[in-house]
Amino acid sequence: MSNDDLNDGATLTVGDLAARTGVAAGTLRMWEQRHGFPEPARLPSGHRRYRESDVAAVRRVLAARERGVRLEQAVAEAHTLRRVGDSVYSLLRTRHPELMPHQMSKRTLQSLSHAIEDEYCATNDRRRILGGFQTMSFFAGAALRWRRLAEMSRSAVVFAEDVDHEMEVPGRIRHVPIDAGSRSRREWFLVCESGTMPVVMAAWELPGQDRTPDRQRRFEVTWSLDPAVVSDSVLACTEIAAAAGYEIEGPDPALAGAAKVTSAGLFLRAVSYIDADRQR
Image (cartoon, rainbow, N blue to C red; front, side, top):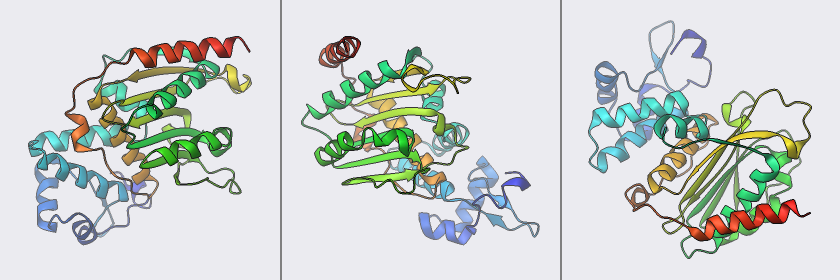
């Protein structure tokens, strides 16, 4: 980390990091020497300081090790998350370049989102749903719908810039505020963690649309029903939360190794919803 990072949330000592993760301070120093991980900020005195995101990163390495992943590979994955960790979309494009992006309007994106949410609700395995809404003012229009989604899921998490401090998050939904400078502030994403309908959709708002009407704004979108891709998306969400000083549960270990699923039902539902919106 550069000196500019010293006051950017890097307040944990190596002892703090050791206590929070269960990894001895000497082991953490050895990992840093051999693998460049975790990478601390340095005070003028030379003492190490770490962020909340470093706690999450070390815990992810430990979880990977428990799954039998070699330390070098687990650390490499942690470095990838650090580079693109504040963006679900960037993580998917980096780790899964086979996912082809498509451009669509926010109007179409809303119909696709609703189709995914409803298909997820139609399954019997609704573990967790996570959504990125850019700002709480955008979430306000979906608050009632997401209250119902949360009631049907084990948990629900919403990521949005907290520009409206009077907005009350309904029901069982957990709100993670994102910084205005975060790349996730320009994203719309939906992650459904499910054994029968795992799906992620991530969209990046194209620049230069300040005067474009809201529902006509254009996004570059990618999606997947691959459990491993969904698992990676949950990891990105944990990184966004950690950067904001929040901790959310990592991906279900059983999800990453699950078989890929296909859903003609989701495709037909999406076509139906998009068509119905065009008829309004």
